[in-house]
Image (cartoon, rainbow, N blue to C red):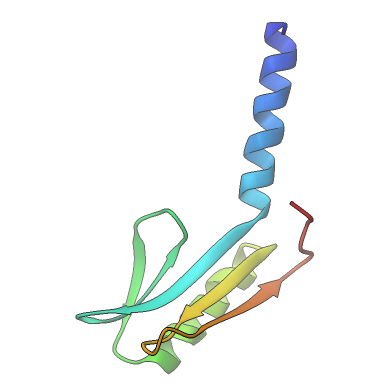
Length: 87
């Protein structure tokens, strides 16, 4: 594979990863946090309602993006903002 072709392939992979962002809302021992999947924590909230609002705002700012809410009972709820691309 030529260097130019390899770079083009790498750019396609990077583009597909960023176009499928997911914002995670979940609880830990100190409250509720909001972060991008596979990244460091971005925000902490005292209750789930505030965290969901913060997660929605973050997902809308980075469309297309998914919002995944992981509740304490193990349930997960997912919604998408913007056009969702097929993997």
